[in-house]
Image 1 (spheres, helix red, strand yellow):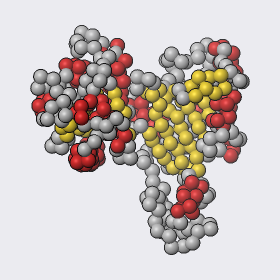
Image 2 (cartoon, rainbow, N blue to C red):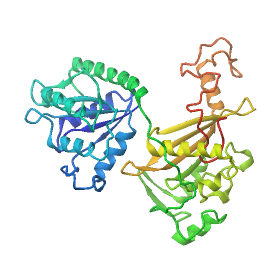
Image 3 (tube, rainbow, N blue to C red):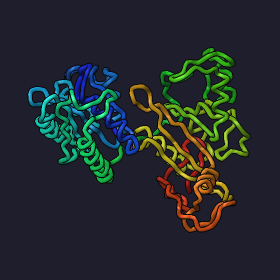
Length: 410
């Protein structure tokens, strides 16, 4: 479960920010929480374009994909901050990411009553036309005397307060599970699989279907190779080290960008031994070229996977491809990737045989699949795996198909 936490203040020091960071750390096993700021959002003006603000684009894209939102609001003059009100106006005028989105309200204040009046006001705003959020009823978490509430490590000191916060958090998680059944996915528009419109990273001047695209494109843009160092987000590696790292992964990895151009796969074995066959000449291809052997109905499945991830209806799509070999559970995971502003950046696909991982886990824990036999070297009679693994393959969406390899779940 992925939530977004919105700091309802644009101040440099905010106890509501501290509260969200405590929630993220303390309840990290219950959900993932991405905390977003509003300090760079301009005052709402309907004559301006919301897309001009990086922070607004990030808020819109991230809220759209989130399972739920937690807003931590201060109280200024018996109401929410002007900064938070402006954000909500921006996100209810031309775009509506809060539509049918589960929202939980929390708040921290210097005073005993917490942010009770601001929270009441915020509930009314979230219920307004144009926003139409599903706000968690009751469960008002009001952290008073915020200056004395946290220790030096950012933890809430009072155990009873933490217990009550956990009760509210647990209720919100359940609420999200219920509300998610009412979610209506965005309609999927036709996908351009022919790469007709270049994006900022498209290498123009070379036919994407040229079998020597990699070499020609590298020469055209002066792509680095060999022992040239590359500064990454959390490290520095040479191009050769990155290549070795990716090839050593126990998965088949592919990447197609948001222009539906197939740019990369980690070539670590021959195509006839791969679960999703790939050949070097396919790098750079248009997606419709990669899938040109598929019948039209299967191509629609490819479009469904891409469109689902592009729209933010799901952050990943998983499917298992039938295999006559019982030692193979052919698993495909399609994960959406995002630019810094949270907009869709393409798909990374992970393909692997899940069976050895299942067998290793069961053998290591002394368990076996429900209704099945124990793996080799294991005694019979172990309890069913606590992970919920089942001998019957579970497909998250029966219509899903391999977006880059063409493997189908049918």
